[in-house]
Length: 529
Image 1: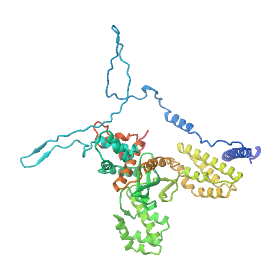
Image 2: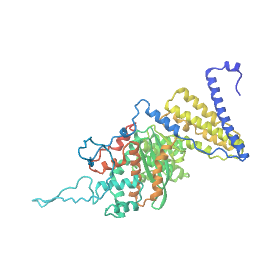
Image 3: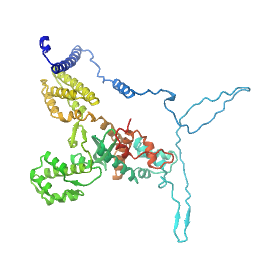
Image 4: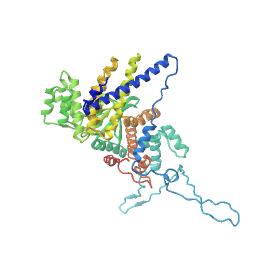
């Protein structure tokens, strides 16, 4: 309990602050315990307990809006809030009696969508030169095959953004009068999309080169009638997706190379091997060899065979760690993730480089605990209350960090996760979370890094929806295009660019506004208001 008034007068300022924090934590715990006891009394009396209502997000949203609007004039809502460009003006005559006076017009602005078939026949001139060469006039930019750029744009937007299945999209086009088959729709979606694939890969490289942090997540995916995994890499400026059949750390490192296929032995690679306990003689073999760069997997495997690393007693572990180290060396050699933080949900394959953990997933472990006694339920509720209190103060610190707050939050973290509650399972879990202190409190040194992976989970939901609606992909081109367009669509949203306009510009649809190269936008920080 607290000291007497005479003892309080002898305390200095830091001790008083520490005492106040301790008292506030005890009060929060007593409140939670009081709520739990009231619910238990109601249950024993046969009364209905408190309904399990989730906390409203209205206050948070309102606070966010107030903060965003601070310092700028609020736009007037209503008719004048958004001006529309008028494409056509029609004058409608009104029947009127003789000698009536004309008093001008009353305007009504109506938005309309024109969706109809439009067939164009291009009559291309043909000329025969005196030398016997035939010259044929070129088709307009964007016209490829027997389907125009606007139709291709509609198909891509409906399938990727509208989540329309191929059979339904084919039926929709036929109802509009388009002569097209299901196979032709598939070709429009996956054939000849090299420019989009290249831009998606360039987006990833720009994000890895310039981002101070990335968040990662994965989910199930179907390809070639097999279960696979789709990995999402991104931050608040870009998103990128890749579907593979592996969920290993090696697979994740291969994705971080952003299309490069080489293996590199450098300082970063050797440091990775030491950190993961690869034997010293093996590290010396790799470090002393004159060849440090290997063009592809075949060249790397041949190098391991020449050094007899693949014939060691602990062959599997040695090859695995050496390969991961060479991949990590390649990632840094290409200029990716320079001092960047990788934020994840504590999945083991993502624990590379400078790593941070999601607070929401850490608290979820506590939330999922089952308590079977009143004392344990009260202890669990007290801990959860203190966790969310600390989480809120960490968010406030990230908005306005100070050295004093940093030291105080570190002390609170230790007090919280070193608490002994008497609930053995909970105490072991708290000790396990405390062991991850450096990764959970990394935001104290890097306030720009989010405290959760909500952004990654929100981005990857489009892949989950696509899997549920359209199932899987069959061809490599179909898989690559699905991943690329989902990433481009999410990147456009983060950059404030309508995906419809992006497709129109890339497909040379006449009248479409110019959309800059997405990697150039990703490389510019704070491009989104």
